[in-house]
Length: 487
Ligand code: SF4
Picture 1 (cartoon, rainbow, N blue to C red):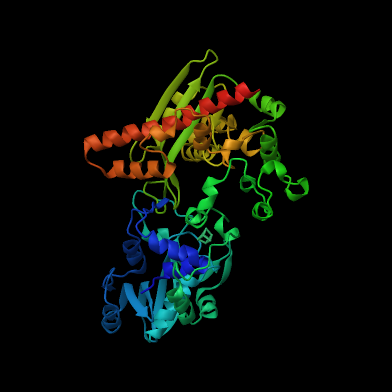
Picture 2 (picture 1 turned 30 degrees about the vertical axis):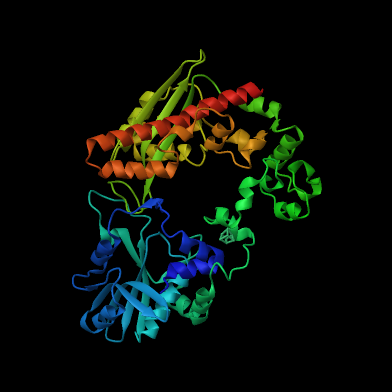
């Protein structure tokens, strides 16, 4: 029996479908945290007090029986052909059934309807007469008070939305227009196996948005590529074609076959120069904007679909830790760390004001995408600290800039410039000795620490989190020192 997730993988790529079947046991860490039971919140929103409630592993006959006995069906499992679906909420009226799908985002999109069409396809083949179709989703304007209010938190919509959040069409009309017989797809999935698949072919779907999770399994030979390989030419649309034609190194790429990005010139020149390129003039200019005391800042945070604390909105983030290294002109390095459980926003804002000097430069890695945003959020929440927090954001320099803009490139970066890559490249004491080595692992450990009652275990996690976040700011001091030595 297949689930919709299997169809989705197969449609994206048959190799992903086969690979995922093999890697079923791999651990998935949800990026967004959902502590509340959405089912219970929606039941309150829809006024459901009495219902049939399905569960994982139910025989499909149970839901069919419930159709005649219950006015509301919640999470009922239905099957048709080789497909099994879960219908979140169904309500019986005099003419048939109203369906309520659940979408835990803010605006249900009408661009990928597979989830809706497959469910409706199965329900119709079970003889269910479908009337209205609506979607229950989170309300992005909702601000939590002391308690969660499901009536305000959740919206019921009969519209899909565009990527700009404008209504894009009636839910029922769009689903029925896109409905198709899924038998052919299920036949294809049945016939698809490791033995019948042709070799994987690299296309834009392998790397668009983010690299496909099966990438290394499909193209294991890439991990053995030389540092100078043309495959590491950032943003090149022709790198695979060039490799096929025998252009193996970046220094051999004809100028008319590059897009002309500054980082591409840096990569090619690094290969020509024997491994390193540095635009010393540009770098010197950038470094001249860094003033003592230099403060390096890094935050860790969790993201919540449903706001857990007063004043928060759906999908707000909660920073739970920061590390600060302060470098004085005489070379003295001071380290401060803040780590807390539960709602620590006010204490964190106050600690930042105490720990970060009011003068000098503030440095973060990927500042625009993270630390500046976190400071802006705290400034918006605590008006009494607003000006000082915004001043910190204004003083912030992004240490990633020299790398992403092609001021510096070392072939050992292999097309990447995360702090971890650069530390590994410099053979500096780094992340490999730590128990926490990834941002998402830190988030997962913090979630565990929040719920753990074992004092010893809490202490171990606390130490690991402090070591990880502290390493991020320490690594920045090493990288800045390296850049200074280059000029
Ligand atoms: S890496 Fe490409 S070929 Fe391999 S599973 Fe992913 S999308 Fe398919």
